[in-house]
Each structure stands twice: as structure tokens, then as C-alpha cells.
Length: 181
Image (cartoon, rainbow, N blue to C red; front, side):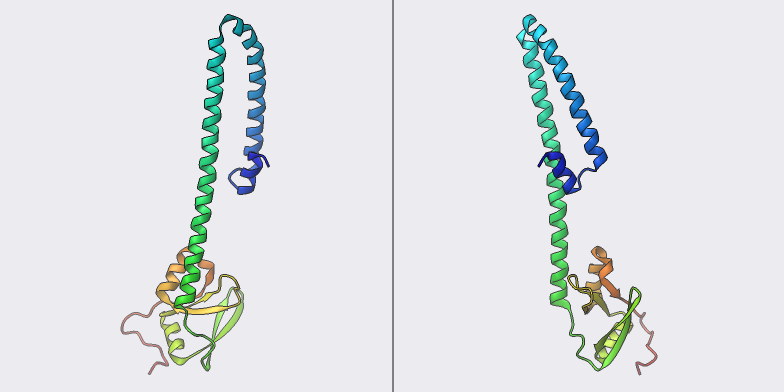
């Protein structure tokens, strides 16, 4: 697989850039052929000119290779960071989730255009209403929902806002829920 194909596959270059680079490479080859024809004539005049041109070509190839390596390393680093964020979210979900579907109260919430529900306890219901708990969709199966504390919800919302399904605004001190007596 050519370097151009690798860059296209990795998403570091688009087809337009690939065509431009290919055309540029062809023009450089044409120039080299012309230089080689002229180099034969010049080689009679002096071998140092030919050595200089070869060293310049080597330098440009090294620079191009460094740029390509830098772009590939940057893509790998971005992918590593994305995987690390996903791992952190999975870790938060596994450690901070509270048991849902064990209560007797059905809590309805909107998920895009669907209305879903969870069975929660009375204290979980009030915590959800107060904005102390939030509902998060599972990363692997978005039909599974987890109850987690609001601080964890906010951390997840920074990187994957589509996973935060239900998060009410926190009540101000002194505000009461109607049924909380």
C-alpha cells in the first residue's frame, strides 16, 4: 500500500490533496529527467554539480518523510487520546453508577424522540428531580441506562454529550419540590 493510500485511509489527507501531491511528484520526475539530460552535459563540465543536486534531492526526501512521520504520529496520538477518554468514561460508568431498576417507582424520561423509563427508589426519584443524579446511556448499548451523580454526568458531558440522556438543573438552596414534604 502506498503512502498516499495510507494517508487517505488514516484520514490525514483527502482525494484533492492526494491528486495534487501525485501531480507534483510527476512534475518533479519530469524536472529530474530534464536535469539528468542536462546533468550528462554538466557532468562533463564538473562532477560537483551532480553531487550537489543529489544531496539536495536527498534532503528534500528526508524533509518530506519527516512531515509524513509527524502527521502519522499526530494521528496515532489523537486516536490514543480518544481511546483513553473512552476508557475513562467506561471506568466512571462502572464505578459511579447507582442501582437502577430495583425500585418501585417508574421514572419516565425522554431519549431523543422515545420515552423510556427506569424503576427507581423514592430517594433516587427526588435526587433526579433535584439535579443531583443524571441518566447516562451505556457506551456500548445505548438502550441501557445508568444513574450516576451529577459531577460524573458533567465530566461525561464534556467529551460525549450524546450519552447524557437526562440531567435536570440543580435546585437552588431554599427551593423545594412540590411532593417533597
